[in-house]
Amino acid sequence: MIVIQHEPGEGPGTLSPLLPGHRLVRTFAGDPIPEAADALVVLGGGMGVHDQDRLGHLKAEQRLLRHCVDEGRPVLGICLGSQLLAAALGGSVRKAARKEIGFFRVRLSAAARDDALFGGAPESFVAFHWHGDELVPPPGAVPLASSTQTEVQAFRFGARAWGVQFHLETDEDVLAAMMEGEDELREAGVDPGLLRLSAPRELPRLGAVASGVFARFAALL
Image 1 (cartoon, one colour):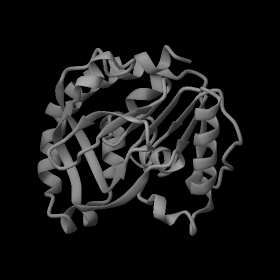
Image 2 (image 1 turned 45 degrees about the vertical axis):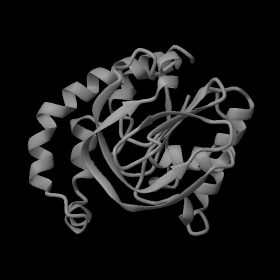
Image 3 (image 1 turned 45 degrees about the horizontal axis):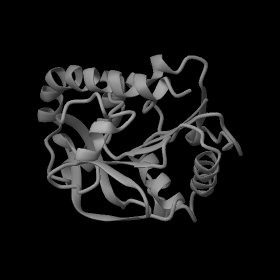
Image 4 (image 1 turned 90 degrees about the horizontal axis):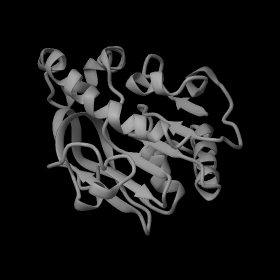
């Protein structure tokens, strides 16, 4: 079980307890990307798919994602990971009209009702978001969720690969690490103080949703 982490402090969060014995690959520390995995989680990061010429590990991650999908391995991409998954499978990634940062509601599609991960989740819930790019799913993908600003917040490809644009994994530690980017928040017109005030109310609710979704993913391993 491989988990790829791109930023210090921004680990698997609420997903971590459900993945005992996972191997953490830290690209920020120069860890090499493996060529294969029995199961794969790719987390978020401040870089983007379009940085792959500058950051060679992004190309290697796309190759690994494609290989795992082709082999029928369980795959979960979160934020940047969802964008890398989409690109690896023939979708695309583009700059969003504006950054989506904060706690905003996500609404599941009708197709999510029968989905192996999201089938037991509420039809709508408030999630944490931090992204400036948006993805176009690959051909054949099933859209599973949206928000007011972002048309595709989650998708499934085949039976065992999921991309989730929002940060379902966010817990107090992950949020604290992300909040170190206060300059970006202010540039996007987001008040860091309001985010911190919202966190004690919203993170436990998000954690309740995440525990069910992640438990169903772990059951596939």
